[in-house]
Every structure is written in structure tokens, then in C-alpha cells.
Length: 288
Image 1 (cartoon, rainbow, N blue to C red):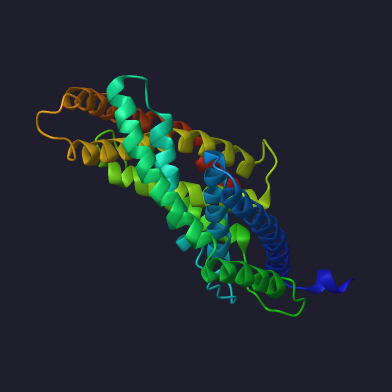
Image 2: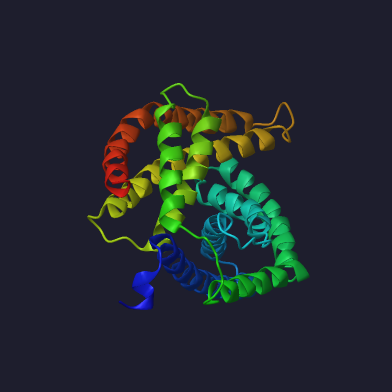
């Protein structure tokens, strides 16, 4: 019998998890470096969006590592926070129509976007972003050490997250606060990125769960966009003089977004039940 076959299953699982995580960190760190250069070189909203997604994927992977004996100090959440204001403003600008009032609002948003982008550029030139890359490189090195006892169990972490998401989703009804739906969205995004580390095939239990997660996240993402739009519209309305002609247009925009958010909230339980069927079957298969 070979040495690998004599190892306890938990040790084999840890080695497999470490190898997967190491390759995943390598890919995401490489993407992050390219996206940083693109953001500094040009003005494309998609660059900011993709870098924010990459930072969240890295955060999800590092959360798995925190379950082992490697304690990462990389603050990728800092980077996600720096990217957030620019991304939110890009979403708002893209959602605008062509009325005179919306064009004026668009000019206001673009001014704030310019300032937010300047702050982001400073962050991307800072020593802190260099530390992020150095620490990611160090983690990849640790994960590649053959004799390192990491105690990693990627599938175990995912099963635990699946159970947390299931409990949270089942508690949400058609009149639940928007904040509860937002917290579920954050948890679902993290779970999605952790499942993607395993790269499951379509039709497998995790593959079906991943497909359902993407569908659910599309709905929850649309809801979050409406909440961001409402928050910024209210902020903008406060800057207008009481007699300003744009108040009426802003009120209509607010009403439209609030109605949209309410429809999504009422639709959520039906979409959740659809997802929960795959989730329940998948958990049953994974925990056999």
C-alpha cells in the first residue's frame, strides 16, 4: 500500500483542500494584479466591478483558511470597501434615464464618482495594497509546504456554510426587513465563492446548489441595487432647494424603486423554496 493510502482520510482531505486553495489563491492574486493596473490606466466601470468580485473571492478563500492553522492577516475586506463607493456610483449612473432632471442628477453623481475614484487610486498606489499582495504570496507558500499540518477541510467548511444559509433563508418571509435579506445575500455570495473553489461539475449536488445560488443572488443583487439607488436619491434630494423643480421627478424615481424592492421582497419566499429543494437534496448527499 502506498504512503498516501495509509494516511488518515482527514489528512488526505486537508492536503487536497490545501492544493485547491493554493491554486485558487494564485489565480485570484494574478487577476487582482491585472485589474489593479487596468483601473489605474483607464476609466472602465467593469474593471472596478471585476476587482471587487476578485477581492470577495479572496475573502471567501481566506475564511476557509482561518478554519485551519494558517492565520491570514491579509485585509482584502479593506480593498473591497475601497472599491465599493465607486462601484455603487457606477451602478447608479448606468440606471439613469434621459430626462433633464436625471441628467442633472447624473452630473451630481459623476462629480462624486470622480472624487471616489481619486480615493481608490490612492489606495491602489498605497503601501497597504502591496502588503496585500505580499501576504497572499506568503499564504500560497504556506499552503504548498508538504510537511505543514494545516488542518483544512474545504468541503466541511462549505457544508457548515450551507447549513447556516439554509437556516437563515428559511426564516425570511415576504415582510422580512430588507436588512435581513441583505445579510443573507452576503452569506450566499461567500458560499458561492467557496463552492467555486471546488469547481463542481453541473449536475452534481454542489453543481446544482451553485446554479441555484447564482439564480438567487441575481434576485438579491437586484434588490440591493434598488436599496442603494433609494439611499442616494434621498441624499441628493436633501441637497435641493425646497422649491426646486426636480423634487417631483426624484419622488417618482423613489416611488418606482421602492415598488420594485417591495415586489422582490414578496417574490423571495417562492424563489427560496425553489432553491431550498436543491439545497436539501445536496446536503443529504454531501453528509452521507
